[in-house]
Length: 123
Image (cartoon, rainbow, N blue to C red):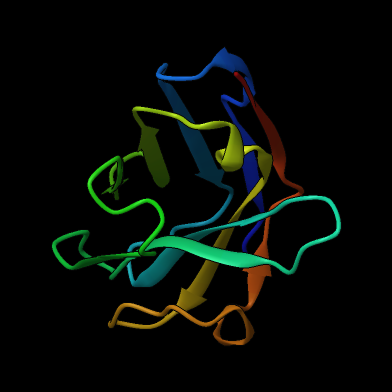
């Protein structure tokens, strides 16, 4: 069983940066990790994902070039560095994990989910 706890959300002005963290309770060395987000009235959207080692990454089109996902297996933590934030990035951001060696981009492929952290970008 893996438990995920996100942190680092908050209110930021457009153009600013935030770094989200997702700490896992168990060892996630062999787990693929991902970030998704959901804005009010919208479906959950894929943001970024990495494979078990952190070497392979994949990004949603809307965040490519602005967000960076990284994984620290020694700390059982995955990060999402968000730069050049836009008001349309406002959402609840969720961390997810799945026992997989490859990058996963579909939400149904993930077994474990965090409770989410709110990110609000003001214009």
